[in-house]
Image (cartoon, rainbow, N blue to C red):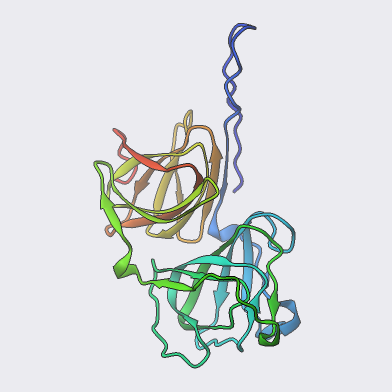
Length: 264
C-alpha cells in the first residue's frame, strides 16, 4: 500500500510556512521483482526498487533476492554500495577468499571497481542494497579499478549498538550530510522515530507504524520500506524478539520515548 499525507500549518502572512510533511509506505507484499542483471536471464538474482530507480542517476535503495546456493561469477560494479542482510546468509568478498557467511542484521560495503563475488545460503535470501549515485551496473573483472576505498563486512554480532532510553541505535556510516543507522526495539516496545527526511527498511521483526493523525497503526514485515519528510512516525515492535530497522536520513536519527503501546 502506498500512503501519502500533506500537512501544512496555517499562519499569518508574515510567518514562514511550515514545510510540507509527507510519508510513503511500501509493504514487502507489493514489491515488483525483476532481474537484477537482465544480461544473465533466469540465472540473475531478482531485485525490487524501494525508492529511486537503480537504472537511472541519483541515489537508490532496492532489495535483492537470491536462491539457495547462488554464487555470482567474479565481477565489479561501477558504483560503491552499502547493504544489509535481511534473510538467509550472504558472503560478499574476494573470489578465492574463505567464505565468512553474514547472517540477518549484518552490514557490508563494496567499493566501486573492486572485484568480488556474492554468494547466498538459505531457503530465501534477501538483502537491502543502497547506492548514492546511479545507475547501478555489473561489469567484468577486466574493468576493475581502485577507487581508494576498502570493502567492509560487519556481522550482526559486531554491530556497534548504543543503548538509549527508548531503544538502541548503531551508527554505521556518515557522508555528505547523510547518515546510516540501525535501530532496534525490544519486543512490545514503542518509540518515536525522528529525522527531518529519511528512508527506513524493516530488517527483522513485525513493526507497527503510526503517523501523526492516524487513528490506527499499520503492520509491516521485513523488506517493507517507509519514507518521510517532516515529523517521523511512532514505531512499535509487535514481535517477541527485537525488531530492527535500517534508517538512512538527512542528519541524525533519534528515538524518543513513546507513550503508545504500538508493539503490544
